[in-house]
Image (cartoon, rainbow, N blue to C red; front, side, top):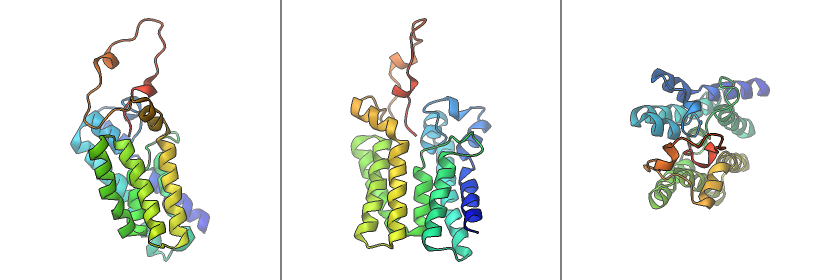
Length: 217
């Protein structure tokens, strides 16, 4: 029974809203920007309306996966597993060759239905961090870490703390390239246009490294 529940949660989280919305605009989101299917890359590539649409969908699919599990009286460690499975589905979608986004919005959605007050605590932390640094990646990581720390401070049940900590760690893992760019000072800030040098064709035979210049998300 538990395996079936986790597989269903994974498949629910695998629904690739970013890829499907982008196709409506005749864009393969996996081949532009950062190559991720999350809301940040969709926002930067296609604009606010599709970006916000994907954001809302990704939050809701994580939250609904947990909500449905609770309607079937699933709680405790298995509910934490449902949350993790939904996020893994988003990050490594079965519909996209096990690729996807970075799991920030879907993680927030799951936590919103696991522990609403703790999850909501992460929103102002995320917003302030992005406002101060203009780095969405930094806001995502700091916000995720703050949720895990808030869970510990609020003496949440152990299964919730472990779930929050695991999801925060997963967000850091999916942002490992961003961490490297932050350290090198090459991370693209929110609202920042690409430098002219990034749009010029590379000399014939020269090696290119897209990961050093692509945007997060």
